Image (tube, helix red, strand yellow):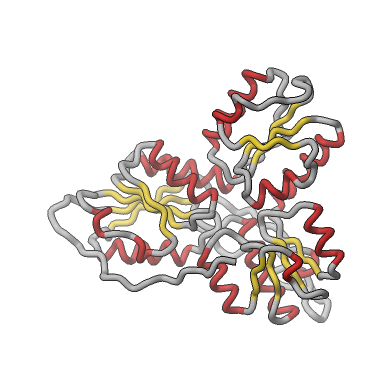
Length: 346
């Protein structure tokens, strides 16, 4: 796995006067979603229950800070299960895995804990069902992303990946009367629907998934930043480069009116030059980002004179997911108090 970057020291941001009233529009919801919360707690609980090391296939969630923190507690992140010692515990990430990965872990005698987000599991089940009915599945998503690899792996002979609206114009199918679209859960809602629109122009009988595949948290964060962006000179999105939903938030902010938008892992990456001429800064974070990182950005912005923080809330989130079955009880067999995920989220 890549070596996580740690925050670097830099000169504090400066409060340069003469720019009018400075304020921050803080998007909400932001940060951890229920699926991420569940996955991170799963690794923590596995370490408590079984002791270090616990192995994790891929990054448990796409956030460099979370990975660094879990490594410090004894988690070992690997690319594939053949790197895990036989008989060891391995956690599958929130993004899901294909049946081939599950079988490979079983063949090595690994004790697998599946931390796949239940909303991703739902898409897997849809792929299995439509493949069983001999539909061709047009999977809208980014080729190479772990979630897309896992979903496609459920029915590789029936899945064609569609990376973009432009690619929709070039897709060929065997039988235009038996085609359905599914999607990666962390995409831009607007871009996904444009891809669907263009697919339907070519394949009028294209079927929709039985329920929305783009997860509630991705949609909520995009709706919030749309509202913030129209009034923001600058938008700062906290999230890692490999976090699809974080990257999408930058794109959405620019599309909906922000004059500039940047993604950062840590507050120290915010540059003084970004604040030149700025009165209003929008701040949000991707669905795999702990709120402590947002608070650090707000602290640095306060030092630069952005003391007025206004929350822009567009939805309430209270969804929780049960932990994987292996972690719902403690070593004595008693139900664990954290069997239901639920760290506080913004």
